[in-house]
Amino acid sequence: MNFVETKSEFDRFLNESRSHDWIVIPTYCNDQRPVYVNNISLLYVYVLRLDKEYTLIFNHSEGLQIPYECLKNLPTDNQIFVYEKKKLLRFISNKNLIDVNMVEYFYKNSSIEEDFDTSTHDFFVKSHSDFSDLNTIIPISKHIEKSQAICNRFLEVYEFFNPDDAFYKYNDLIIESLQKVEKNGLYINYELFKKKFSENKDFESFTYSEYNLYTSTGRPSNRFAGINFAALNKENGQRSAFVSRFGERGFMMSFDYDAYHIRLLSDLIDYSMPSDCSAHEYLGKYYFNKSELSAEEYQEAKSISFRQLYGGISREYLEIPFFFKVHEYTKLLWEKFKETGYIETPLFSRKLHSSFFTDMNAAKLLNYLLQSYETERNMAVIYNIHHRIQSFSSKLILYTYDSFLFDFDKRDGGKLIKILKEELEQNGKFPTKLEIGPDYHNMIPIVRKF
Image (cartoon, rainbow, N blue to C red):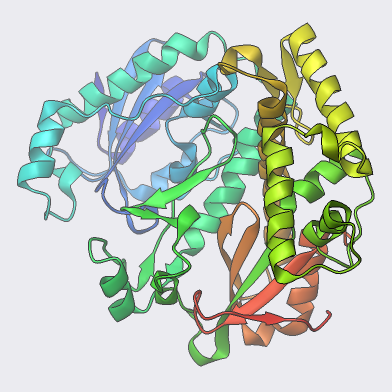
């Protein structure tokens, strides 16, 4: 093991290793804090061709400290395989970072397991949990032991690393899009937050979500510090804790897609679904053979549609043109899957191999494809939104499957809302409902056209 703890040692390390690929395992100062209010304690670096290990010390009680500015000098011409790239992007924005979990995900449809802590880590967490930068006092040797375990685990799949365009879209566009949402944070009403989420900490009036892309369905989960941001309760008022950082000149603004999976499926099968009414209402008129639905019939129409999409289409609904086309598409998809052993996601062409799943059937396969399409399209939308709103103050702070939440600065005005609707709705193909409010709970619909 080579220890690097001065600027001159860092320069020597770069000269020796910059032309080779690396595996990098960061240790942050405190694992219980969001990375956006955290800092790097150590970087473990394994240089592949040289078979050499380095520990770069930035902030630890056992060593001197390399200036954080040195991170800007990391090479860009090699491949740097990083454990949890999305977190490291907070400090390093190099385009040559490759997430080790993404390599595993494309190979097995799962991430590398997360629990590599040693018994020493567990002891310190139990006995010194109140120490603000806990990892800076845990012995460096134990951090190295943990990092070596992660590195060795990744080396088991490294030989299967065979990137294609789909891999780079996931590794770059998706990870970077989610990181941009996370770093914006959610501003909180302190008293309400403590009341609704008593076990959780705030971080200078903000809390932060953390997306996990590596799910079996392709739909990211989103939780941090005990809060499931993908399933915030709509009924108990806990959403009221999330307010605008802009005070009186701001408000919360939400765009929710109408019947998103139906709309996505319509796009896949090239079916023209009308944009001037809800897709549930459109299909409900077929179910009940009526031109107008009651509120109860509308809710029942939603239930019927969900059963057809996720459980297979009943024979009685095959006379409806939309479901007939869905049925034919599902059959073709299933035949291709059985014949080739995989299907490709619609937007980024990621291969979903039969080895990824157990007990697969035609209806489940369609569901997996839809969820992957939903994620890929949402990530492309988020990427475009971030690109187009850089000059505005408003922030995209939460994405939840079919909903996008913004912390809106009133000074950005209707011009920004128009841009957001353009990106989200794609010329009316995916209509949204717009709501605004002083907090995430007390939202009212806006019917004005932009």
